[in-house]
Length: 417
Image 1 (tube, rainbow, N blue to C red):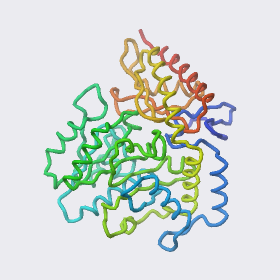
Image 2 (image 1 turned 180 degrees about the horizontal axis):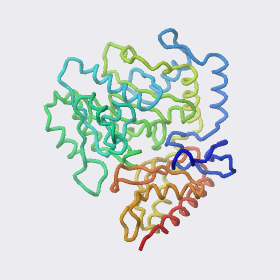
Image 3 (image 1 turned 60 degrees about the horizontal axis):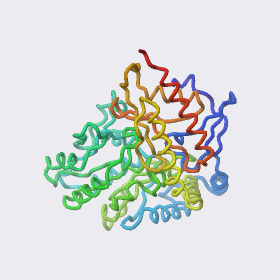
Image 4 (image 1 turned 90 degrees about the vertical axis):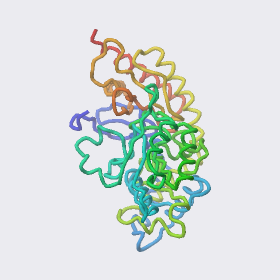
């Protein structure tokens, strides 16, 4: 919707948002899949106020701060063995930029200039992050800015029925290069803005880890949308058992309460050196207020077992989306994990208009008091993301499902037979 006609938000609590005209909206996509713990959580607001009364800003070149030390310890404990430090930014895009910089420092003096990612993919809006993204709509008119990351190669699926490439597809591309040329492989374990809930298989993740181990390339895993519980695990890569070299995070780290991102760095990346010594700039990164807020979010997630909730609620939501797809001709069975679920949309059942149906569905959902997130890069990949806060109750899921079904019925009336 054009910004000039968007409703004006007034307040939000839990999974509900209210505008100044008295309408309520169930936040079925957690904002932009970031409000993991819901809106207005008292424990987080209290932590923010308490920290603000003490100190909101102290630059990392002048002081350490206790909230940041505690936050790093918590993040490293959740990431598991093999990780050494955390570099902080203000967003997921900046965290991806940091990962690319650390990759470049790791390979300094070598011939490694090739970064391989999959199509479709989305890794952020800053120039470096967008340069490695295979998201044509978001790259439109910006190509002249996107050539500073060396050679970027996108792997596509050879199977038209699949969204993401298989391990064979990846290896077909990787084997075109001398192993000493590849700097990194990068992927989202579960697709978001571009992939709409499509998953990178365990086989592919393990195969890419083996390639990196044998070739000396780094594995960068983009967990900006998937990280910190969204998929029913602390990280989207967790079920595969691999250990990435760099984990890029944002969104769920502070659940939308304050800007913060982080790059989690394995000991393999800059052995004997600190990654923080190579991450210059970003005045606000790692400030005490952001750190205290993110720490409160993670503690709330742990204390309320929200990772397990995402897994359990996700199973029920998947079942409901599967049932809805049987009754709606433009919907296909859902994909994704936990509470990161995509409802794929078939643009071409007989009689539908040519405008993207995911946008029409999103607009109709809003009219029904439900927020969902349109995703995909073309007609083949389009879907809507249904990703409510991990705190959603069974009763609230009932409301979400009813409003989603109503939106589907409205969208079905768009036939032009």
